[in-house]
Each structure stands twice: as structure tokens, then as C-alpha cells.
Length: 44
Image (cartoon, rainbow, N blue to C red; front, side, top):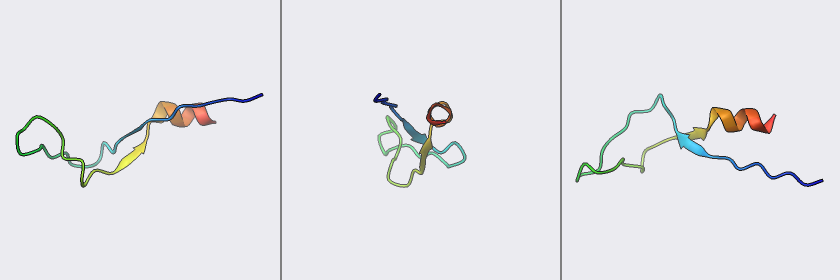
């Protein structure tokens, strides 16, 4: 049997978010990502 679990990495909620210079997005260069809590439970 083969099982596929799709995982999603989300920005760390403890981190500080910075907007891009045009104010329309998030600056991703310094973001730390973590595994989504629901996806973490799905792996167990």
C-alpha cells in the first residue's frame, strides 16, 4: 500500500513580518518557515 501525504510549510507565527516596498506583499527573504500543525498531526 502506498500513502501520499501533502505537507505545507507556513511562515513561523512568532516571527516578525515585513511588507515589500510597494506594500502589496510579504518580504520572504528573512522568513522562517515551519510545518503546518495540521500536517504535522497527519504524519503521525
